[in-house]
Length: 110
Image (cartoon, helix red, strand yellow):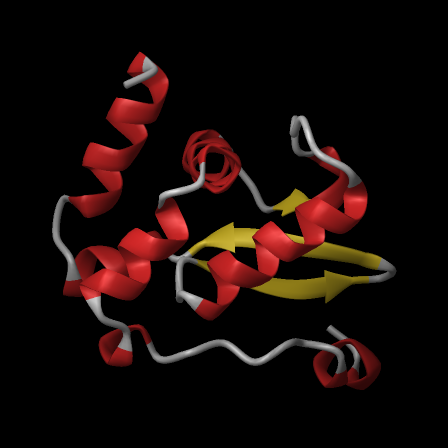
């Protein structure tokens, strides 16, 4: 990653400082749950434009910001693409089982 890419990385909160309420508030929206589920199913980071989302690009940007600020995803640049990663290990360390339960429920449509 170049110095320019490093300079463009948005701030990410320390997951240990996030409350359960903050996570639940971020996950109440079905579009954001879909993003988390798609990341959980992915073998690699996903570009913002490669998600299957039923919203406009500007609305998707809002959803990514909410998830990042809640500590659920990490974003970084690879060239001109903003890549997204689920912070599974970090979230699981603080809230064990939360992501597994969320992803299972999202896949089941409940």
